Image (tube, rainbow, N blue to C red; front, side):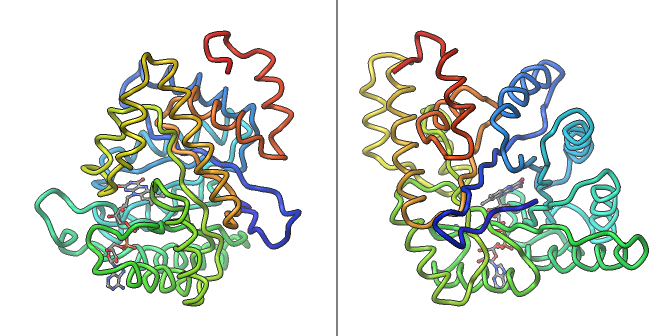
Length: 315
Ligand code: FAD
């Protein structure tokens, strides 16, 4: 997986999407429509989430396998360490590498509700998972002459809810880089300045890996309202007011897409090496954002989609 670090003005901007494993056969069907729509935009990779408890391991691996076998997409497998014992994690990493995965997003996962510590015997931090991934990889490289895989990690433009400070978050990011992280993807944020400040803090502290902004299409009020509960990130009140003031769903979509595009463009201006879109398994908002962003490498597809755009969504 090439995350295209933005080393020069002409470096291509990476595009990626996040998907989650479907929870029912009906959801799987809709997801595959989304996958085909997103595939046409030729993203650099698509990431597939993994439940913190590890309970959706089989559906996650199945989705990743299908992406590898049935599409041209390159999956980035999320993996969390709070819900599985290290031996289980080593087996999952081996399984992912066996099916052809070349990139893993190493995460701790959210602690179970009410728990302030990972389950006993499990790895404590994402950094420990990176170490484990690199160890498994090293054993396999010696055996199979397999190349190095890409390991990504999470980064936080606004303080992680359990962290004492944003400076501490950057120290953690630096530690993850030292353990072998190749790139980072950020948590959702609402102000480009928060991303730019993270870049400044990280570079000053010695973090050199690409930090890709994770951008959520701001088109669902319900989803935005749940963000605080799910990720400890409160949506900007001004955005919520503008969405609430929209007369109907189409206007709300336009308001949300425009706000998302403004944020993504500002992050690119601040030096973002790419954009990672949280799709929530829906392609419509993601493609609307992409059309308006007009990333150089994806223009051709934007233009084609613009020609076929559904009339009610045309601006
Ligand atoms: P860590 O980097 O381990 O940090 C966790 C906490 O511990 C932080 O407060 C940090 O400051 C602290 N910490 C870390 N290392 C140290 C240290 N050495 N010493 C002291 N303190 C330390 N969750 C899922 O369940 N499934 C997913 O698929 C998923 N995908 C995500 C994708 C992205 C891009 C992002 C940003 C988050 C994702 N999450 C996912 C959420 C993530 O699991 C949570 O944010 C979780 O609470 C922290 O994960 P982490 O990998 O950042 O953990």
